[in-house]
Length: 85
Image (cartoon, rainbow, N blue to C red):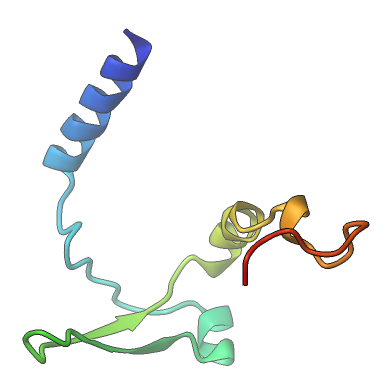
């Protein structure tokens, strides 16, 4: 029941989102400018170019840094890394 409600809530959120496929970022923040966090993504199939830039960097750092952390894949785990490389 809870899983179904969560899925339906996500569907509603996606349906109501505006410009989610090609979001418009008007100005990058100072940190992303200093770190050069921008570029152009080229879609190989069509050759279409999508320029991108980052904003809200300070708010995103805690979530993005913790999502890639796995103690089992660290080199400092006794016995060495256990993740395939």
